[in-house]
Length: 143
Figure (cartoon, rainbow, N blue to C red):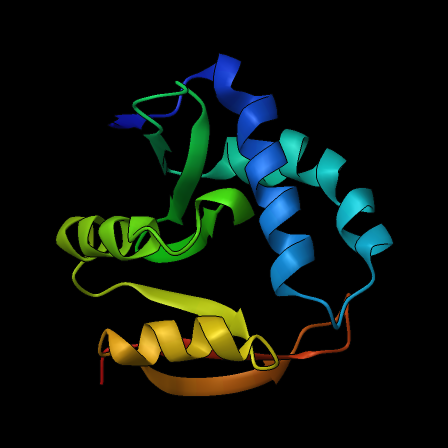
């Protein structure tokens, strides 16, 4: 089921974000992500304009989400146990219907995510070094 975020979803969304971030970003220490939980809870998620969730129909648990700041796709995360089932693709299709001109940032070293977005028609629009981690990020969008 797809639904909008409610305040009581906060801890479940953070769990999905943390688990998926640690799994996808092995080049960044787990401690970095754990230290960022407070900012996710108090800053990033509350600042999002829209947060859309996928809730597993069988378990009732949130297993994926995406968040926007205007047309910037600030987050699209699928829990590791739910990956490979098409949830990322489903959320991305919804995202592009919501914001056809969306852009996003992804770590260059996250080759799986870069390939995912390329396969869906996004191209690299720019590159920068993310200050907090020192790792390169790609800005992606439609050409």
